[in-house]
Image (cartoon, rainbow, N blue to C red; front, side, top):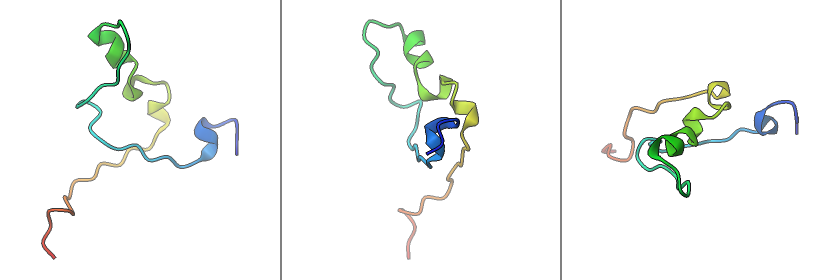
Length: 61
């Protein structure tokens, strides 16, 4: 594991609608809660983002 790069170089998959449900930050304002989210993290620009656009579950086979 490489300690010089985020997550030690491991591949991580984050999924979901980051705007839908914010995590709980006790006694914070809405702005502070948003600022604590992943998309505001210093790590966000370092991540490769892939947007999936085809709903495979609703597809008929």
